[in-house]
Image (tube, rainbow, N blue to C red; front, side):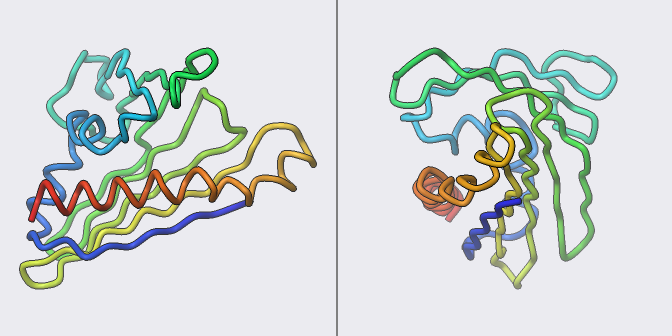
Length: 159
């Protein structure tokens, strides 16, 4: 399976960075405009619409139409883990419906005094069996600019 990782030091404390990533507004703020993101619905683990926090068990239904080309791609993301302590935090979302055969995105945050090290790690595979697996490493062509922009936007908004 192909992987992608990006780390950035954010000039804000862990609590601030964590709070920013804890609801759908963070996702909307960080998704580049060229992705054409539309949040269709957000449900908490108990089925509540638009929960205050994206706790483990939450599901986010989205559509994306990158560069306004082609039909919109539907994507459902399931928050499968969420942990926080004094020095680290993480949450993991898995695609349960969408354009990839597999997509597991782990967001990690590490306290560093009044700063935070933020890491995005994605494990992914394109559909298409053996051919999809063979070309999956080329996904970096789209992932790198998207995550570079997400990390730069996080710095701009939180520092």
